[in-house]
Length: 291
Image 1 (cartoon, rainbow, N blue to C red):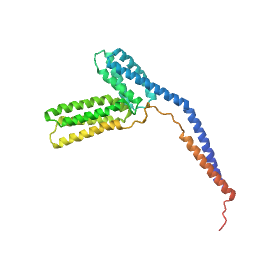
Image 2: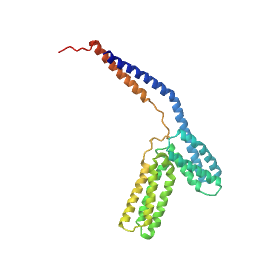
Image 3: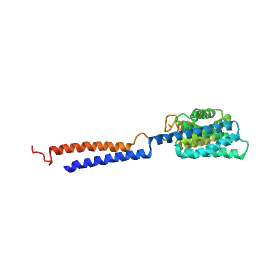
Image 4: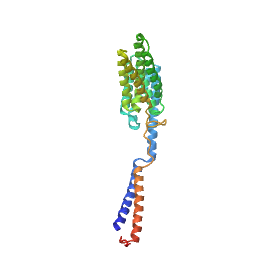
């Protein structure tokens, strides 16, 4: 009987000690002030990056290559810091670095070209999406791209002579718009979403190039366009991890579940130990009287 009392007491003591240790360890590893400061630093870093990206885009729009080179250097310095403090998918970081290199290479080549404006636009959309994951500018492209799909469908119903050129032009617009939003799409969405849309575009182009050979072929084109529109919608309707307009920062934790679990277990063990002690006091030797 004494063993039945001792076991809950020992477990209670062990859990209390574990709860205290877990609380101290948690507080030592991530003090509240340090977590808040870390989140604030990451947010400030993200805002600086977004401002530099916007300035780069404005410089590209004005074809101010000197200012553009200054801002692209700022972005190159900020990206390594962002990768350690901001959440994002590896494919998204790769796309972002690729766009920054494209701008830098274009400016260093000293060729008069507007290609760096497209890469600057991709960088700006990505930075804006990272700062405002729930309502970034890139989300507006869903309507634009669905209109592209609608134009392809309308072109497909034109007379045969006009059909190919009109459909090809609409598909080219869709591909160009996807290229603009690839950065934020790969950064905030599962990689398979953008890859699926790319494959849908490729497959639809193959069907459109073949032309309406028969009724079955026409049905395949209609189905491909339906699936193409659905892929566009899936790319944009997937909700990001945060639904508020805040940077994609790791939020500071406000509670330690391990310490709470151990504390609750200690309370339960204390109750069991008390009940065992009461029972022992009433029947010290555990012998029940015969009825």
